[in-house]
Length: 251
Image 1 (cartoon, rainbow, N blue to C red):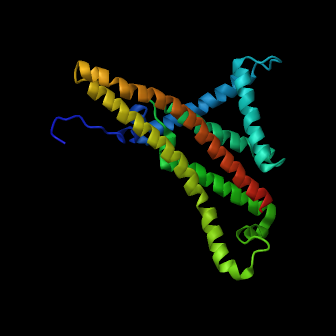
Image 2: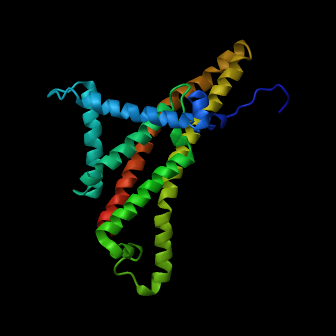
Image 3: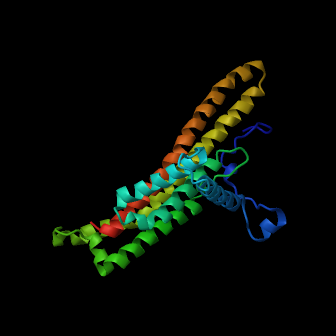
């Protein structure tokens, strides 16, 4: 690239910087941490102010809070069974923490904390540790029969057990990478098309006309990313429920 030519730094948006000035730098408080606090505050505000009226005919905010509650509760009971009610607070928190992280990242001058593998892997690790603890608490050492299903030929144990163990341990990896990769890919595409708009607009009249194409693509991409934000939060939560189902019921 020649000197002076504009460049596209599509990955620069994921760089962590300190927030809250010198105080933030002293405790390594980044914009990712700040957005997590904002997401937590918005979730609590939605539930508090949504359910505060307790009206028989709910308003929009109360209806939204009730839909959120019923939707996640239904997910837990449908996938895990009656025991799913015990895990509802965990799944609800996980779903909305991921969802608000995805949505807040679509705002200008914001930051998507779910675009960092450290965050998504930490969430996935909490899920796998919880499911393992639940399985051991309910089934004790019988939990380890999960890695060798009943009725399987014992001669195949040296093959089946390693495959099942690797499959089990790969859960947090696949869970975290799926969310992380989708968030990164979407925001990189935003950055690339936005850069094309600026470059073409600076090229004169014909450039401004040509910039309409990338602008239209970015508008379409925004709608697609809104769908992906909800879809990835749902996938993360539904897989958590499936893992908890395996922990509660084993095979």
